[in-house]
Image (cartoon, rainbow, N blue to C red; front, side):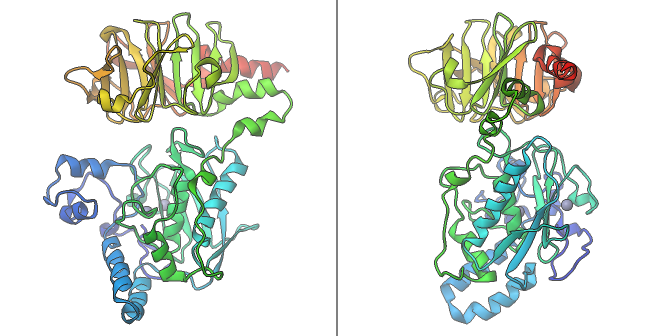
Length: 488
Ligand SMILES: [Zn+2]
Ligand SMILES: [Zn+2]
C-alpha cells in the first residue's frame, strides 16, 4: 500500500495496481500468478479453491512484486557473489531500506481491551525477532517522534479508499515500505495477546514490521512474511527466507551468529490473572473482567446458569444475574485444555460439549465421558476451531458455526448431518465470526461478537434485535457490577 515504492517517497498516492488482496475484482490479479504463488493448480480461473485462498485473513499489502523479489533472493543465494551487487541495487529500488541501523518506534494507540503493558511487551518482542537476526537495533521512543509508528484505525483512515480497512476478517493490517515508517492495524479485528480467540497481535505486528523495514511478501508458506495470517505456535520462529531477506538489506548481527527465540517465549503476553491478583477488591475486579473484555465461548444449562469462558477461566451467572468467578476450567471440567474455542449445553441429553482445535469433549456434570476427548475433525468432518456452538431446539441438534458456514452435528456420533454444512445466510442476519452463542431461557438464541450481541428469533429465523451486551443484557450480570460500583 503502500503506494510508496520509491525510497524516500513520503506522501504516496494510492495506486490502482497496488490495491490490496481483495476478492471482488479478478482483474486486480493475474489469477495464474496468484495460483502459482499459493501452490494452487494454475487454471487462471477464479475456481473455488482460488476464491477460498483469496478470502483468508491476511495482510493488506499486495503480492505483485513479492515473487520477483523472492526469486532474486534465491537466485543470488545459488549464484553467489557475482549477483550480489546487482541484486542489492534492484532490491532496494523495489521497496527501499533504512540507511541507519538504530531505529526508534512508538505504539501510538492500541485496542481498548488490551492492557497497555502487555501490548508494549508484545511489540518489543516483535521488534526483537528482527533485531536478533540482523544488524538492526530498536528502541521505544520516549517522545512523539519515532522512525516507525504503529497505529490502529477503523475503516477509512485517509490513506486512500483502497487502503480502508474492511471490518473483521479479510485485511488485518498494512504498512509502508521505508522510509515512511507507518504500520496500520484494523481496529475492527479482535486482537489477542495469547492463544485464545482472535488475531495474535505479536504475529501481525512482527509481519508488518517486516514491511516497514523493506521486506516484500514471501511465497514460502512457513515464512512470517507470507501474506496469510498464521497462528502463534510453540515452534514459532522466523523462517530461513525471512532471515535471508532481512540480512540482504541490513546484514548479520554484529555478534555474528543469529539468535532464534522459540515461540513459546512469546505465547502469552496477557496473563491478566496475575495482573489483577495482587490488587485489592480482588473479587470485584475479577468478576468485572468478562464485562470489559471479549470472551471465547458461552453456554447456558437447564437451570438457567450462564457460563462465560475466557482463557483458562470461566464465570457463572445465576438466573438472578449474579456473577461468580473466575474459576479455572479444570476445577469444574477436569481434562479440558488450557483454552476452548466453543461450548454448548444440550437440552436433549443434558450434557456439556466443548470444542478446541479439531478435538471435542463431552461431560455429564463434571465427569468426562469415556472415549473423550475425540478427534472430531477426523471422525465426523467437524470444522477445526469452530467460532461458536449451541444447541438448537428446532433441529434438536448441536450446531457449530465456522466462518460463512454452519454444521448440524449429531451429538451421539459426532457426525455432521447429511446436506450440511450450509451457508450462514440461513440464519437471517447473524454475522460471521461470532465468539459464542447460546439458546437462552427466554426462548431466543443470542450470538455474541466482541462487545455486541444479536438476538435471533427461532420461529421467524431472523435477527430481531442487536446491541451491546454488557450494558443491555441484564442476565449477563454486568449491570449489577456497574450499580455496585456506583453505590460503593
Ligand atoms: Zn504483509
Ligand atoms: Zn493505512
